[in-house]
Length: 221
Ligand code: G3P
Image (cartoon, rainbow, N blue to C red; front, top):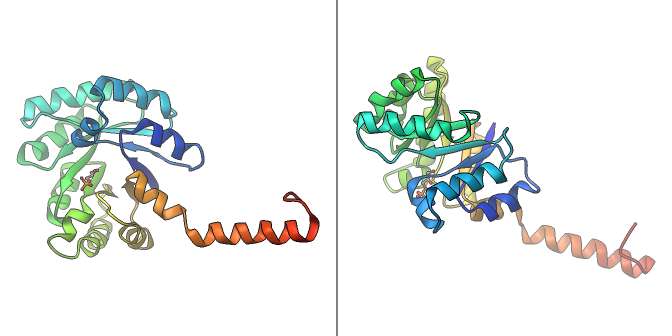
């Protein structure tokens, strides 16, 4: 499975990658604007902070077919095409553009997905990844359940597109999709931190150290 960080905060990426085997980074236009940096600077920093084996997944801004194609080529050129994936929203123009972008040898992640039915069409159009917005889908119903169902639908038809579940607001949403075997997730740094930092673990470690020190007068082996 692949685990991506959903952020353009390069310091947060550097910190998480220093101890976690992360598979890359996803951004979207809003995430990039939140960085307070020019997009060119963000992409340059992502190329610097990530290894060539980690994917950079970036989104087109254009909403028309020709514009999406042109921007997809621009994004793919960021790193000479290696481990770059272009995010295309599943609008009518986006669905039309997906096979054309794929035909240029560019990997595609279909994004802005609010229903398994949109995801199905993006898979049929040839997208490599499908990004359902889990938490936003939860506003309309059982977002987690619908994404689990999507994973099963793709498997039933032998469709190659991978679900890359996105838009998580809590650890439970991530946990339930990992337990269901979702092939990829992209998660913001604060939710990743909440997956890792359990207060019980910190207390257990403090107790081990304290008991060791009381018995042996030192805090090392
Ligand atoms: O990757 C897509 C995702 O970033 C959307 O997340 O938090 O805006 O719902 P959010």
